[in-house]
Image (cartoon, rainbow, N blue to C red; front, side, top):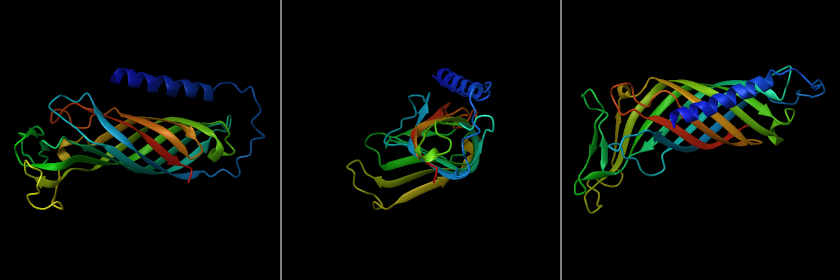
Length: 245
């Protein structure tokens, strides 16, 4: 699966790049870009999952991400249908675990423990692992109407490169077997520890949409966890992007 996704991104990226650099057969000098904004905010929200996770790691619920970037767009002079956009921002991922799985990020062991609790044991009703990265996205974009991008079909392929800001677990509502709260429903346990998570994030991205709305997908090439300290899993994301504000 990993090789298939990587190959699809590579074919799409280099195919688009070759089209952008192809010899000109049309005169684009009449396209007026004076009214086109060069800088935009980009918001992304959607679903996250871990690919390749072992049976010992059980997830549940709606795992999700929220990303926000400030982007700057540079149209290509030879063909303004294409542009290169660069930016900076923050991306977050929240992976929800099965209620009878407890991850101990404060452990002093050499590998991150995922404890599987008996069905009769007290447990948290909700628990998640969260990572936050400072990211620099780069995109190669295509617009059917470059002079009016907010009323144009658009597509983009790119990459995000990031560095880890935070890594932590968050659990809430510690309950008994019958579902009653031990400490009250507002009880929250949050544990911070960055040492388990890969400090560098490299994610391949793709988007397609119309106007300010697009569908996006991303595949994290670097692992979620550092080599040798956790399960070998990669993050796959799919969601919506709002851009052009």
